[in-house]
Amino acid sequence: MSWLGDKIYQNECASKPENLTFWGEGEDFPSMGIGHFIWFTGEGGEPFYETFPAMFEYVAQFKSPPSWMVELSPFVSPWKSKRAFDNSLHSARLIELKQWLLSTRGHQAQFIVNQFSVRFENALLSLDKQRGKQYQKIINRMLAFKLGRFALIDYVNFKGLGNINEQYQGEQWGLISVLDSMLARDIEIDKITDTQLLKALIDSAKLRLKLRVKLAPKERMENRWLKGWYKRLDGYVVE
Image (tube, rainbow, N blue to C red; front, side):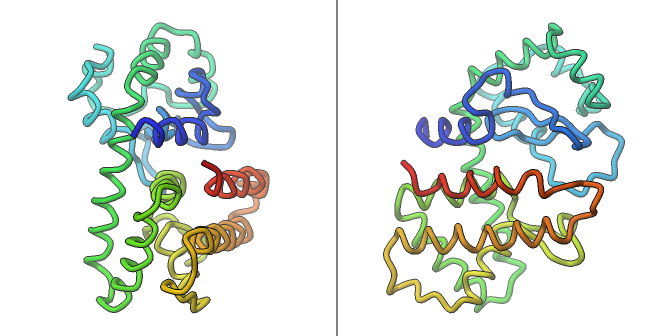
């Protein structure tokens, strides 16, 4: 769990404490913690899957969070814009939050693992039984080796499992869509090595993300992120 947490911390935050509280250029919300968990501002309209409140609730069981966060009602980001957030980078609130996030990395990693298991099992319930068995076969094989486990868990934390709200022109990019791409290539799971299976996942993920960028609204300029996304995926083969 410590290894997994360090790897995700490296991928999302470049292993830098200052990146534990982050608001990306062109995004409508801040991202917190080792997994850059999304925290909505409360203004609605975001199509993405919010994860920070659930992470906060889980980790708070093990280490008391800053008192100002406990008092938030509703539990939404107190910063409503990137400008307001950037102007508060050295505020007492963000310093406290950063320290709490830095000291709870292991618990955040456990939350990410728990979320992967729950979300994938729930997704299987809504799928065709035969296709679900094919997905499960790939997942079971990848969970059986260290880098495979990391790739699955990190990708779901990175780009989600997939849902109808996170799509462009009907095309999604979550893990389920990546698995669909693998199955479409008729990969014989039982006849390839672990490394080949991992490479097949990486290649399929790159195809989905490339399609995402192609279909994204032009004003989002998502092409600027593609190189970094590919680098992250390529890192799955490095222990």
